[in-house]
Image 1 (tube, one colour):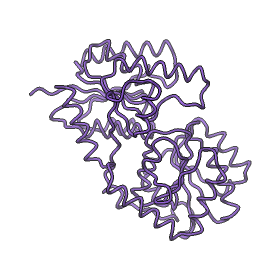
Image 2 (tube, rainbow, N blue to C red; image 1 turned 135 degrees about the vertical axis):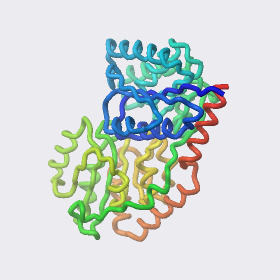
Image 3 (cartoon, rainbow, N blue to C red; image 1 turned 90 degrees about the vertical axis):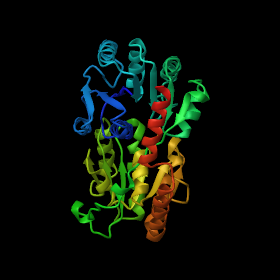
Image 4 (cartoon, rainbow, N blue to C red; image 1 turned 120 degrees about the vertical axis):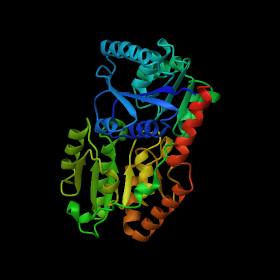
Amino acid sequence: MRKFNILHIITNLELGGAQKYALTMINGVDKDKYTKYFISAPRGLLCKQAKQIGNVKVYFLSALKQRIHPIYDLMALIELVCYIKEKKIDLVHTHSSKAGIIGRWAAKIAGVKVILHTIHGWSFNHSMNPFVYLVYVWLEKITALITTKFVAVCQSDIDKGIGCGIGLKDDYTLLQYGLDLEKYANGILSKEKFGFKEQTAVVGIVACFKPQKNLLDFIEAAAIISKSNPNVKFVCVGDGVMRTRIEKLVKDRQLDQKIIFLGWRQDVIKIMSIFDIVALTSLWEGLPIALLEAAALGKSIVAYDVDGVKEIVQNGQNGYLISVGDISAFADKVNILLKDPQLCKIMGANGKDLLQHSAFQIKRMLSRTDELYSHLLK
């Protein structure tokens, strides 16, 4: 039986959930069944990691830009069509909105029969300009006509897509991210490494500093929390376009001595091991991998109740879900956990137990991927 040529395309390789998902998937599918190709723009902390995957041929496409740019977008489309034809690709699997649109149309033009797209949270949301929102929905509706199957990382993305008229129910399949739980058993760091005493409570967030992740609300909550818990510390892992605004708010709220910024880090799991509570203030999400990792590490979670978050956090069991924008309630729930360390530990243990009996396992993810590819490539 001949090997099939498969290609994954993503817009960039920043240290995010979509990128981890795509790299885990392309690395894990059977190299004896598939010749594997991977395309991204040459941007992001994970570019080096992608190049180090031994059985995947990685190509960096400079014309693939984050923002809409007609000239570069056309260049990227043409280059992708040529690449797909040259490599005789049998299956194209796209991730993220920009690569999702350009990549799927390139695959269609090149004559690819199997075209998949993973939704890592839809690109449109109601915080957008209404006209821009409608344009994004229209683009997804049109591109759905050439999409063999939508792969969703959470049920809420399926419901939202169908509700917006993007494909039909049978066009979707649920394929959640899977963790290798053995990775989370070791590698605990000391809080003293970051200048904290071991008894210091630490609230952490792992996120790209962009509008979606809404770190300004996290900083505002930190200001409230600090008034009740003067010894608490906050750690922000990540970076991005909003860093200047975030740092200004930290200064305005006189939190300079309370919050540390670590930038992008490869050792995120080890850093999260010093957190007592993991926070997330996103305005929208797909399936936030940072929260899966928090659960795997036995950390309690306080997060805004959006999209796939509720598929990880069971309110009152392994953390708390807060209505978007309710900063006061967010701070109150963090304070409850800080004042009751035993409850904090119990919730963290609950999350770890829930994860071990869930669908979020790497073996299941890769097995489901292989089943899907095999079925569609018949």
